[in-house]
Length: 297
Image 1: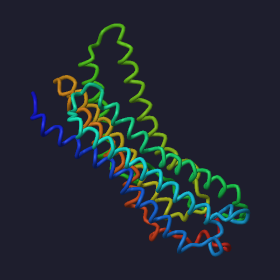
Image 2 (image 1 turned 60 degrees about the vertical axis):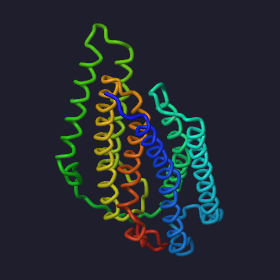
Image 3 (image 1 turned 90 degrees about the vertical axis):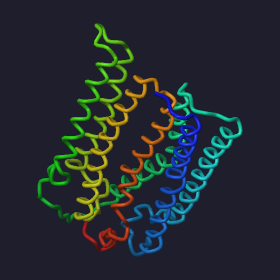
Image 4 (image 1 turned 45 degrees about the vertical axis):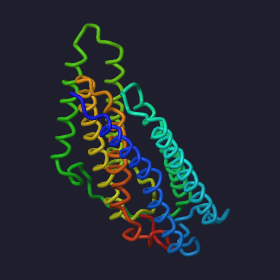
């Protein structure tokens, strides 16, 4: 089975351009807009618990410096991506499936760097919050939380079913030789670790302590729901991608792999961080818990 090379080439460039826009331009702009909203409407003087280090240095100033760095890094990475597209167009490049998907994956890793650094800074910020949380009076909800309080059983069952379908399909195509090839063990280990991360995310939000010690109970429940949905959909997306990728290899459609892996990365962003950004808006968060006289929840 073959497709018109011009169509597949144009499709790849459009999909890769979408990857550049989504992760290096659109979502960074949304994140910066949210941070600007918080800094403008909830200053350190009135909401000191939101800025745990505000008594030692100008936290708001540092935050704005970090925002400028984050914006600059994403713009530079977007320009690199556009440079790759222009180079491909000028040289007449067409995807052949000879390892080009590795370039798409490498660029995705580069795109993820500013976001990973932001997450590390966020975890450090939460750590400072916990260290500064010296309130002796605490309240907490005693309601026990279960998985299906936050998500329907249907997507969970679908996620498990797709893992089984991929496993059977993969082992059938790979061949059940004894001993199994080393590549088979590597793939099984990688997929198992990825799904373990999804499970760990769910358990952490159901049973683990809050990263933000002041977070209002209703906001914690909303956050937990979004994380669980993102983890389950992430597992579904991973299994779906692996099944499609296996079929592409089996039917010698390797030239479609660069576009398919780019689509997969974009699905991760849309249904992962993107879902959190869409469903957890700062306008809906209870910031009164960060006031000086607020009780720690």
